[in-house]
Amino acid sequence: MENVIQVKNVEKNYKNFRLAVPKLAIPKGFATALIGENGAGKTTLINILAGTRLDYKGELCFFGRYSDADREKPESGVREAIGYTGPGCYYLPHWNIKQVGEVSELLFENFRPERYGRLLAELGLVGEGNPGSGKKVSELSDGNRMKLMLAGVLARDTKLLILDEPASPLDPLMRDKLCEMIREYLADGGGERSVLFSTHNISDMENVTDYAVIMEHGAVVEQGFVEDLKEKYVLVKGEREDAEMARKILYSMTENRYGFEGICLAEKLDGLAGMDVCTETPNLFQISVAVMRENTSLQFH
Amino acid sequence: MGNRNSYRAFAPACVRLILYVALPALLLALQAFVLLYAGRSLLEVCAGLYGAAAVFFDFWIFGGICARGTMAFEYLKTSVRGTKLIERALVWDGFCHFCGMAAIILPGAVLERILPPSEGVAAGMTVRLLTVLFLDYAVWLLAASAARHVTMMVWYYLISVCAMGIFMALTAGALGQIAAGHIWVLVPAAAAALLLAVFSVKHVMQRMEGSYRDETIKTGSADD
Image 1 (cartoon, helix red, strand yellow):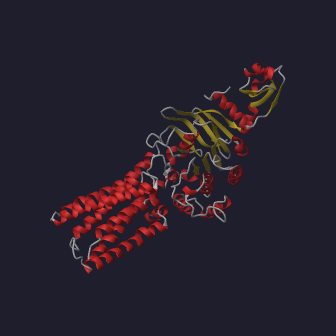
Image 2 (spheres, chains in turn red, cyan):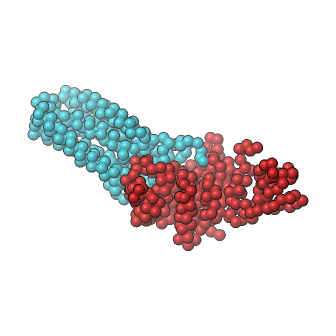
Image 3 (cartoon, chains in turn red, blue):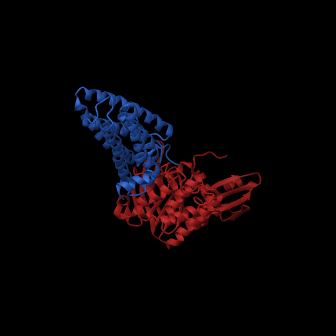
C-alpha cells in the first residue's frame, strides 16, 4: 500500500507538552481521520504536516519521494499539491470573498477561479440571500468562514487535503455536504488523492473515514483502517452482576444499574467465557472513546 | 506575479482610489483654495493630513498583519509564493505612498509659485520640499509599522492622529532650521526615510518568518 505521508521520529516540545510520533503512515487514496481529545496534539501534528510550523525535529516524506526540505522548494510542487485549511480563519480579516479568490490565484498555479465561483454558489456563500462576494471575512460567521476555506482549497487541483477540524463550525447539514465533497474529491482522483482531517465530530465524519489515527498526550495510541479496527475491537454488553469480572477484561467500560457496556479487544473475548454477554461490532466513535478513555488523564466515575 | 498585482491583492480598489487619486486631488484643491483666498501655504499641513490618512487606510491593506495571536500569515504560508507575495506588496505599497506624498508636495510647490503666499516659508525651496517629503514618508512608515501590530480600527485612528502630530512637530523644527540656513536637516530626514522603508518591510517579513515557530509567535496554548 502506498502512503501519501510518512512520519518518522517527529518531535516537538512545548513548555508543558511534547509531541512524539516515532512512526506514522497516512495511506494514499483514502480519507484519514485524526482523532483525539483537546490537547492531544492533533493541530500540532497537522501544522507540521502542512508546513505552517517548522520548529520540529524528525523526518517527513510526501508522496513517497519528497522530504520536508523538498516541500519548501517551489520546483518540487509539494505545496502546490497540498490544500490546507486551519482551525480558525487564516485569511486577513478585511479581505472580502472576491479578494480571497484573487489572492489564491496569485498564490497557487493550480487555483481555478471558475471552480471557486461555482463552489461559492454551491456552498451558499454567493447568490440571492447569501453573503455575497463583497462580504468581508471578518463579517462571516464561523461556519461561513470554514465554507470559504473549503471553497478555496477545493478550487485547486491538489493531491492531498489536510483539514484541521473542518466539521467543527459546520451545521449538521453542511457536515453531510462536507462528507459528500470529500467523497467526490477522492473519487475524482482515481486513487491518487488523499484526505487527512482532524475531528471531534467522529459520528458525523465516520461515514467518510477510511483510516483512523487516534492520538493522546502527543502520541499516536491507535491507528488502522476502520474496518480492521472494527474487527480488532468488540462492543460487549452484559449483566450488572458480571461487571466486576468484565472490568478486568474490557478495554473500557460504562455501567448502569441494569448492566454494563464496554469495548474489548477481540483477542480477549475468551476471558468473558461463562458470562451472559452479547457482542456487537462497535462504530468508530465507540472505539475512539474507548481508546481515548484508556489513555486520558481525565477522571471518570 | 508582479509587485503591482501583489499589492492589488491586498489593497482594495476603493482604498487605492481614495489614497492615490481622490485624497491628493482634494488636498491640492484645498491648498489652492487657501493660497487663493487666504494667501497662506498649507503644504505641510496637507502633507501631514495625507500621511495620517495613509496610516488610517493601512487598516484595509495590511491591518493587524503583525498582531500577536492572529493567523494573518497562515494562508500565505501554505504557498511557496506567499513570502514573495507579501514582500512585493509591501514594497509596492511603500513606493505608492511615496508617490502619493510627492503628488501632494511637488504640485503644492508649483501652486505656491503660481499663487505665492503672502507670508510663511518661501516657495520653491528644494530642500524644504524634499525635507517635508522625507519626513512625511518616514513618519508614515513608522506609524504604519506600529499600527500593523493592532487589529482594532480605533487604534489605527489614534496612531494616525499621533502621526500627524509628530510630523507637524518635526516639520516645524526642520523648517526652522532650514530658514536659519541649516540645510543639513535634509540628510537625517532622507536617511530616516530610507532606513524606515527597509525596516518596515523587513519587520513584517521577520514576523512572518517567526510565525513558523510557536516559541516566537505565541498563539496561545499548545494546540487542540
